[in-house]
Length: 247
Ligand code: BGC
Image 1 (cartoon, protein in one colour):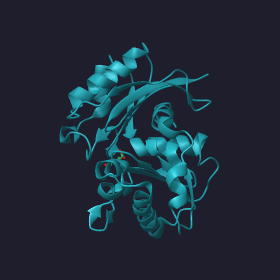
Image 2: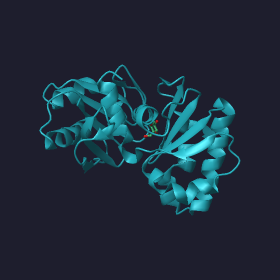
Image 3: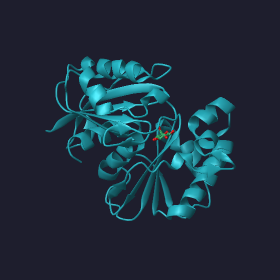
Image 4: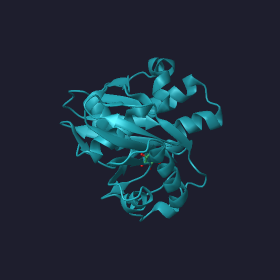
């Protein structure tokens, strides 16, 4: 059994657990702390150290971040403090973890990597788009099973707005939208992404994937298959650990 630790930094919670890379599952119940507000580099690093320390872990750690990440460096921060931009997150977080080897990648990309190996995207060779609905909208694009990183489709323009300001689950909650009303927005968004990429499959992830039966049947007119993520809210943790282990 090969184990690596995975941490998922989200807009509302920071959670992590050791991951069994052969099964694509957590080996222990995950530990979660609330994301500090504002979510500054220092505050978030302290929370990551608490989550990893909870398990007494020493070994490689994969960490997701809700923004563009190239070569472990943060490039955008739409839903966390802007001080993150330009930070070498692997160095910052690795130092806080007492020098453990750290790999950092985009949260939706991590979720996608896990779903393609162990979940709803298993064996799919055509274009697949995974979308995570939460505080923002994250995206991961695969073709031939390979990830095109940092696609940021949550920031496509929809009705004159950033799509995630129109169709995320945070917007559903903040505006008190019914499932019907929200599903209609998601449908418009999927149609737009479909026009651009013609994927064979959409995988719908994020916490809301647990409630797929409430909104997926309301989404009509999309040519691609639309299915819920199978690893649900653990996909980010599992994918981060997989990438830290070398893919
Ligand atoms: C960020 C993405 C992230 C998504 C989900 C967006 O605001 O720009 O990088 O994947 O939120 O957290």
